[in-house]
Image (cartoon, rainbow, N blue to C red; front, side, top):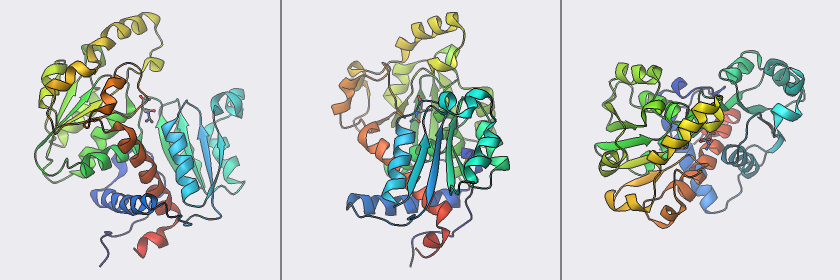
Length: 330
Ligand code: NCD
């Protein structure tokens, strides 16, 4: 009998809050299949003849490249615009709505969009004749990162027993941690959540109240702290994040942010404080908040484990949106 739960229609992916537990389980079951195929270097021609549009209006390495590889490993092709903010008609003032309708008219099958303006991907989706995946909308959300982060946590055993997950660093402007909280809420909706969240940040970078209120409503156990060493000692999973300097517009705010950034840096002095069984995660890119000295430690799971999961989850999503028939017969 298939281990894949019921299939469902999946179209736009805009927010981590849109998923049900069943949908997430399906995505992860398909992700496991993608892993098996890739581990054997088996070619999957599931999307042959399809064309995926990749529109990136903000810098990206992992999200854009992992989508490119996901598309390629599935036998599809992509047409991309990096630096779309600068080199597309957006620079002339064109709206995302006009852009997506134009690109759909060239027979693109799906668009992946990253934009610097909060809510812009959802706006494009409102008029889009083709499915759209939000690859990050400014300080808003990053749902595919949330899926890959939750997949990473679960496959590393986060649901086996009571687990302490520390989110550390810039929780105010980081969209990955916002989306991760939301997907945790969705995944354990109506069921006891084994994860206890520790939101660890200097005062100026605390998690916004909207997410705190959502966690409270969902009865997810969490606490806020600025004591990084204390959090480190308790962590089963330590999710480090970077200071989102590009989201600060005020020079004085940037200067003050840089001063506190050293307070949440993780380096080899911290290794002795951490549990031997703990895992260190990071969405990457890192700047100086995560020392490369940690990379050789077996607890470092961000590279290549977490990054590879990004490609595999995105392969699963593209397949589920464009080939529901394939998923149905699993
Ligand atoms: C993150 C992002 O773009 O929000 N990067 C990523 O997609 N892996 C995290 C970051 O930029 O700090």
